[in-house]
Amino acid sequence: MRLLTGPLSMFGAKAQIAVAEKKALSCAVEFVPFGVKRRYDPKHPDVLRINPKAQVPVLIDGTLEIFDSTQIFEYLEHAHPQPPLWPSDAKARAVARLIEHKSDEVFFPNIIRLMSLQNDLAGNDAVAACRRAEAFYDEIEGRLADSDFVAGDYSYADIALIMAHFFAVRLGADINESHHRFDAWRRRVSARPAVQQVLSPMSDFLRSRGLAPPAFYQPCNAANRPEAT
Image (cartoon, rainbow, N blue to C red):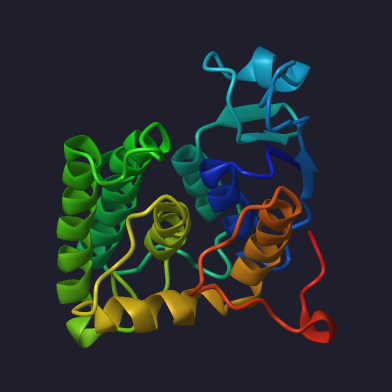
């Protein structure tokens, strides 16, 4: 099995964490060429061939070739069900899938909008994007009232949200002082070995380009840092 991703791909990082959480799974993680100026140009030939959008992540497992982080989640869960990363209860599973979807398709578009507004974060468009992000934080804060994770047990929903939030904080859409449960949640999730395995090198990549990773993320000590997949 091969997973093609990039050093600053939010969706690729989701798939990386999922692969790392499936501890018995043998999967080679391959970073496609990436540059700050040229980004992913030229495109990796397997990415071009498999994904009509020419984007990572792409998963190759023998004759199976798929793209999209959510589709990769679904395949991994069916093909490698242990440890489970969707709740077993049907309603809880539906909630987890909903939050995973909202993280990608409702919350993260606001963060994408902020990418082009970094020179005007006090402007109306940036403020509106941050308010929409804050409304999602409010929703998650409520969901965490009776649970350590966003849909009961730790799941793909937590993976999706921690990665979207990691990028959000970098771009100016952090939580506020009322989101104390969310703050505890992000520290809890980002301390997981599989998440550290992805966020530590991503943070190192940011620092190598003179960019700061989110302050909430605390990497493992070098002696305890998990090895890459």
